[in-house]
Length: 581
Image (tube, rainbow, N blue to C red):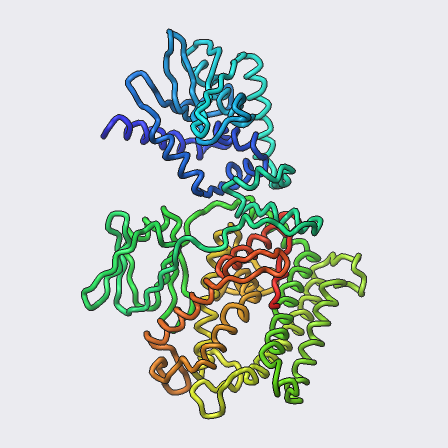
């Protein structure tokens, strides 16, 4: 083992040991985040959310290139007295005195000053080194590589201890609370923050005052890909940094591991323990679906999210909030169903729609009105009266599910009006059935919903929420209620619309299905075709009607999960406002 490797190993040992203490030392890097933005500190240090964007990787490359000569040292130091620990970029002797140098990728402040967060970080390192060596350090330096400036920071030990101590005390205060600090008032700080896609500051400011259209800081696309494996008897193994898919015919397909976000294994597909470890360590989700498309389970990385789950548990005791959020979900679902039915039957002869269709739409609109009434004024028609008891919440939620269920039955009854098929065709649709699907159209519906459920489970877990505790769906052992809640926003938008389009384009044949007595399943070719259709739909971009920026449907699922989490955190949000135009 090289000296660097030994040092890195010792560093990891110290860091891991710190995690087991009741009150671990504050990382100096976390103080840097605190001085930059308290919300950033809380998300990173308290909730344990880390996102590595291109700026983070550029910073890591810079630190890898720092000169590591014989008289230059990188040190991992900690101090019980100061309450901090950290890894110095550079410590060395110049003219007999000890010197601390902190390297930064960006530019200095106006070419003459260090930024406040960099100054605090450097002072903390100077105090750590001074205590460790028993020597006074009178100066420290910050080297800014973008403008090639080196800024000198005078170190007054007493003043530095007071400044760093105040920051450590504030950090401890924040670490002890469940409440996230507010979004920073300085909007420009958010534009270069790696956690903006998690924090959603622009969306929160917009929800608070509905002012200017928010700038999009949420990535429009997923940079890594989802890999479905449907070949029965296939297996997945790990070779170096690659995931290798072995097919029964002897062929193999290597995949660069870090380009994969999720593996979805359909039916009889094996995966090695080493591959599972690699996926867990690199944030790659592994999901199992049965041969028929039912969701079986998952291995998802990350066991954090304690604060997020604690806020979720607390919010579930707020009966009023739970009912109002449920009403919003039902409202979005039914309103989109009505809009879709009307949009696809508009124009030409369809303007004179069948009376049965008009009657059905009218019934759905009536349900939508009742749901909207509950959303606005759940108790006695008074928007200011809150639901205070579980009995009242259960009664109102029952009414809500009743109206949503009635609207759903009408929707499926009217769906044949938008399908270009007739009785006797392979994909003719006579109504919803699913346990098991009895015709090809219902088999396709169920399979697509299973794929959507997998994506919703992944999004809920990625956000750090407990999927077993939902707001609209009742607890059950066969499916996660919170994932089912989220699904209601996307059943139509992601799968129904894509499926109806493919059916009307005559893309399905009887060779895509296995038909047995009383049930119909998609075979391997059919599943492969359905997965292609589903994944292509997810990659399509659309413009969010409220936030007014474009993003893929795949990213929209995660966005809605994060917006829901904001509701529980007491922050302004625009959850469940997505509508078809």
